[in-house]
Length: 48
Image (cartoon, rainbow, N blue to C red; front, side, top):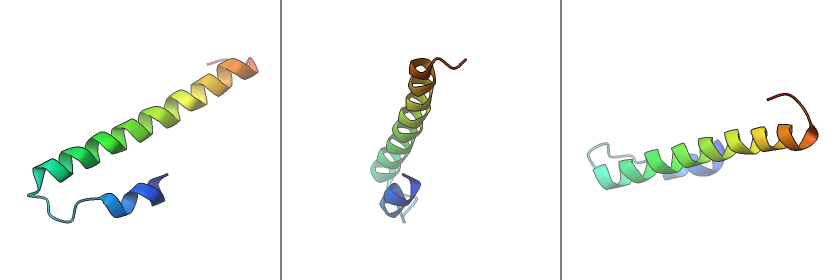
């Protein structure tokens, strides 16, 4: 997933709207992957 969103990273650090979008997108992806792993562990009966 990091390879997919890497090109979206803002080149200009002064573009605060783009930077905010990038940070929220990155956070959402991290949260999605973390929760997907935990749901998989719960469904498979493993300890979380």
